[in-house]
Length: 71
Image 1 (tube, rainbow, N blue to C red):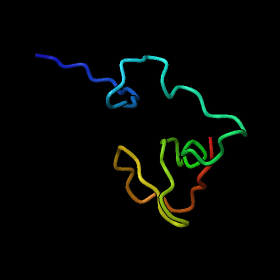
Image 2 (image 1 turned 180 degrees about the horizontal axis):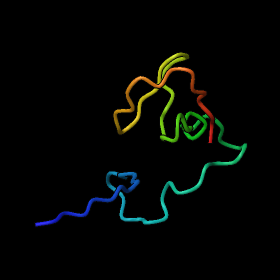
Image 3 (image 1 turned 45 degrees about the horizontal axis):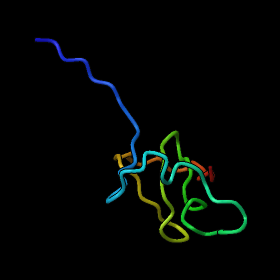
């Protein structure tokens, strides 16, 4: 039996049936709604949670020397 695995990105929106909900970042009218804390680090999407820490949905190992880039 051969298994083929692929990766996929997803966001789970709780209690909404609207498929267009939360798909674009807000403009300057509503800054700091969370979108400005999302970014890439070593090719992975992460969320800043403190000045020197962020979380992601995957284990990235020790990736020192990389720069967190806001998306």
